[in-house]
Image 1 (cartoon, rainbow, N blue to C red):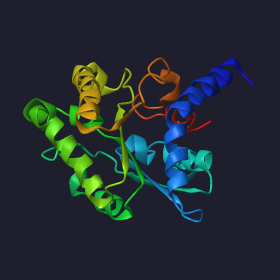
Image 2 (cartoon, rainbow, N blue to C red):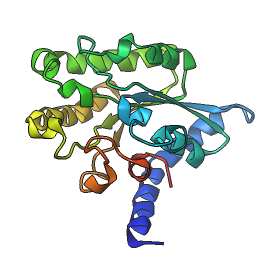
Image 3 (tube, rainbow, N blue to C red):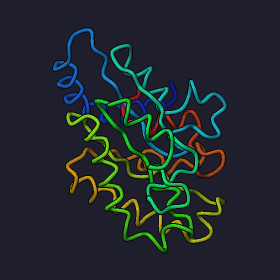
Length: 223
């Protein structure tokens, strides 16, 4: 096993410890034959854009393998989706959002905000971001009042992607800084998708979407 592989496993085991107690509690509360439902909500990073076999190697797919048969992990990612409801492609207007609500997940992991760095969105609607995120969280709690919600700090953007060179990387950082405040205000869990990947541009084929190995690094439960 390579050193990087060992380090990745060590880091991910630490993340597992943080979530393990909750998962044990949740599964203990459900009937022995009931499956814990996990909804992965997000944009193209969640969807698995640029991954050759996203049905196998996107982070929700790898999360399914890591958690095993007692869990049903569904991918509700949408390419180009914005968190902002006035954004150029609001997640709240997609069929995936409707399907995610109908799924009534026990655990919801949200990774949205990268596309809100678009010049059509953040400059005009940044003041709506916190309220729109709180609204989204409330929608999933309305579907399942017992759902445990996790919001995600965004994966990194690297040069030479236009979003990095144009200066919108500063807007992405503003969004990253906002996510922990949203988590605290809405009493959700917080997942850092950025730190495991922020020094690994080699895992991004197009400087914005993690490849299959990058999805292992960012996957909150994977080993």
